Length: 107
Image 1 (tube, rainbow, N blue to C red):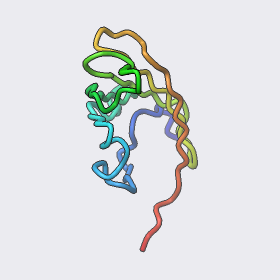
Image 2: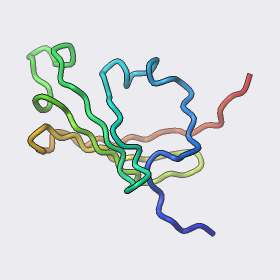
Image 3: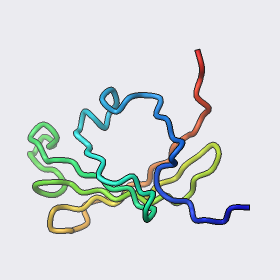
Image 4: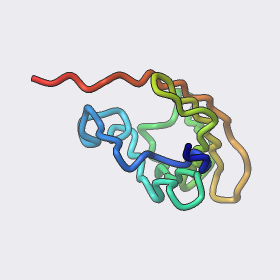
């Protein structure tokens, strides 16, 4: 039985929706590292005026830098913990992402 630690995005992962057609493209996520080296997926988002809330605020200045570490990656559910930091490495938010995993429908 393989006892290696679970890391980043699986090499066999096939997205159902192309990146340019999903929410990540709308807010401008730039994937920097798939996490297969050390288990931490890295990305960043440029701060733009259209991402700010009604009072003109948004976590951070310049870029919002995200690191996502897998906490559980099972057959039907993945659980990730995402930290968002500003360009000065100050913690802005921690997000728990629970992903339902389903077999790809063919046809």
